[in-house]
Length: 398
Ligand code: PHB
Image (cartoon, rainbow, N blue to C red; front, side, top):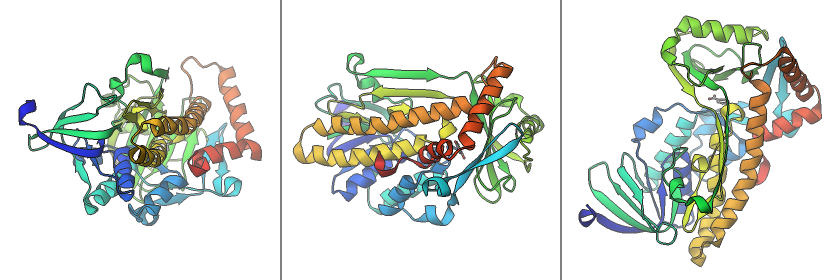
């Protein structure tokens, strides 16, 4: 009931307290701008959701350089390359040698924990486990955020600007009228089956495997916990997969390229859908979208979290201008700046995906052509350098 709500004001209301929402509120606080961030999920629910694990150099610099935490340097593993395995063997892409950059293996859940701790340390206003979130009906010119907090108390917060950092099923995105935006989609006829395994690492760096039975990725988490994925049908039921069946499938795919996996108990199994999506522009009136709310990429290029962090770095700058000037022009500038990078990442993620996965009904020609493409990429400096630059992240926030 509206009458019993607690009314308050802030400068920026943020829907979504995942990495994008929290990093934004952290950056805004450093610029002296107040915000409130809310999330339907509890902190524990977010921490228990397994997500991707690779950070670009710029993402690491953002976490460390803005004082979130230096744990990424202590606990993250520096990777100076990846292996592309196909046609019976492995081919290393040497990031350092090609573009002088590295990535860090540091899971998204750790990024989230660092950010949530930093917001708490700095007295940030973050409310987890809220319900009944809605945004005001005239969100385009008078943003209002309504929700019920974890103690059952209703709130109505007026803000200068509203940010939808609320993930791929964004509620905020739906507030932008159809006539004011364009949506771009691409579906893929496969998904990833992801597992966590209690075992020592099977490889020192990530191995992206192309094989006649389909794609498989060897990734890691720690010295005793590993992450692996294999291409599957989007409708696959995890209940149909015993540990034995999973190991047989994974071993045959990576075995085709000379790898042998160290097995152990499988502690988590999930099917991850694949989708490419962009909504343009990323703003409407005083509402602005960031991260997965505005765009999603398939996980093959490890770009999702990095794009979200790149968005909010630009968004914080433009919101600072918008607050100072009291107008919305900087939001259009944000959208334009962010979309440049988003579309490069869309292409890269699509390219990695189609180069490495087997399409249902693929002919022997299709498989051999993919191997030819992979040989062209790994066999020349020019071919490898594009991959290395895109994977480690285009420099300078662009
Ligand atoms: C992961 O470790 O979860 C991971 C790594 C690389 C990807 C996707 C996911 O491309």
